[in-house]
Image 1 (spheres, helix red, strand yellow):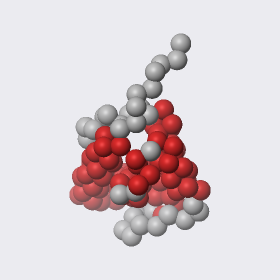
Image 2: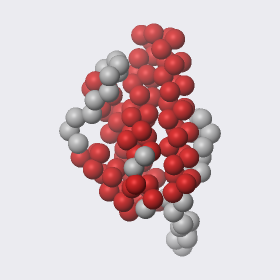
Image 3: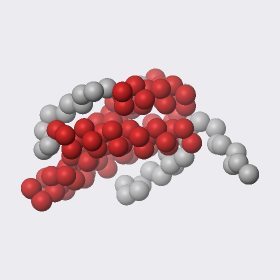
Length: 119
């Protein structure tokens, strides 16, 4: 049997985005302290922050379908840029992976209640 989907809660999604940005920044700080050994962790956290920052102030968060379209539009882009990343190719790969995760979350309206740092 199919589960009944909870109603879309834009405030919860915004809170989730803000918490993910804070967590990503903290992860970048930790990765910075370890230097070259954690460059891939830095790029992964930078990708998460970049994606969440792109969507946090967007009006698309107000509607589930519009957010899905906004995430798909970001995924369709060819070039992602953020100053300070260690490896551009790895950053782009992590951005696309995070966008696919966010697409799945938006489509099923699940996971936005998990606001703790580690998920």
